[in-house]
Length: 221
Image (cartoon, rainbow, N blue to C red; front, side):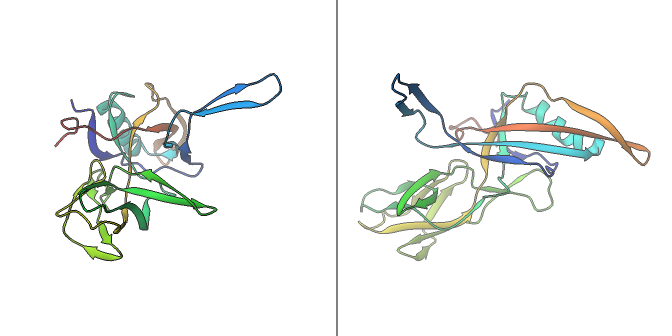
């Protein structure tokens, strides 16, 4: 068994989806009502709650298969945030004339302050929705000029240039990405609440938590 697989749950979540980034902050409340706050994570972690409403036994089977295959919270797989899974012109580094490997990231900006959030799973679902992952098309730019002279590590979001970008060269990229996730529960309760024609339909939800990318040897080939 491999801890990571390049697969998505084949069933599509319904309305009522919730998800996004989360941080972990340690807060100590002082007697004068002041607070001491410590940021325990330098970057946010993705989470999502996926509702499945009135789905067929076939679609339920796809969810069950992934849960069994990943052994509940143990194993990791892919999920694409429906609200944010593409970047365009996102800066991920500045050349120094020596470094050849860089980490891809998505950027946010507020009040002129820019933050980068690392992205790792440079994949997208098969358009036929087989559950398999396809490597995302990525364009890398050096000072706004596209370059093919790179190698992309799609599992970890690493870009390796054939030769080091020049000192001060601004590195940006276009592309799409997913998240490495795991189930956030070792139980998978679904209910039977209705019929559709001669068959039963079922309801339930799945909670997912983002995880770090796989290390060498941890992903199924």
